[in-house]
Image (cartoon, rainbow, N blue to C red; front, top):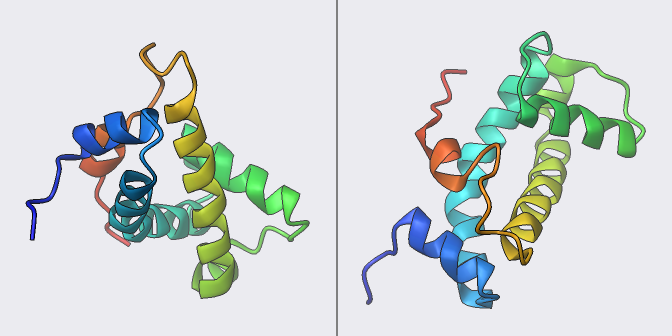
Length: 115
C-alpha cells in the first residue's frame, strides 16, 4: 500500500487531471465538507464563501431554508457535498489554477467542525 499523499499534492494531481487523485481527494474531503455544510445550515448568520455556496445550492435545489432540519437530512447534505466538491475540483482544473484562490484545500483542511 502506498503512503497517502498530502492534500497539497493531491490538489496538484487533480489540477493535472488525475482521476485517481480526484477520487482520493473527494473521499478525504467529503466528511469534513459535510460537517462544514451542516454547520453552515445550522448557523446561517455566519458569513463565508462556503456559507454562500451552501445557500446557493439550497436555492438551486429549490429547498426552503430550514437550516437545522436540512442539516439532519443526510441525503440533502450528501447532495450538497457532491456539488460543492465538483465545483471545487473544477476550479483546481482550470488553466489558471496556479493563481491565488480565496480558499484552498489546505484552508478547508485546517477548519474544524465543532457541531
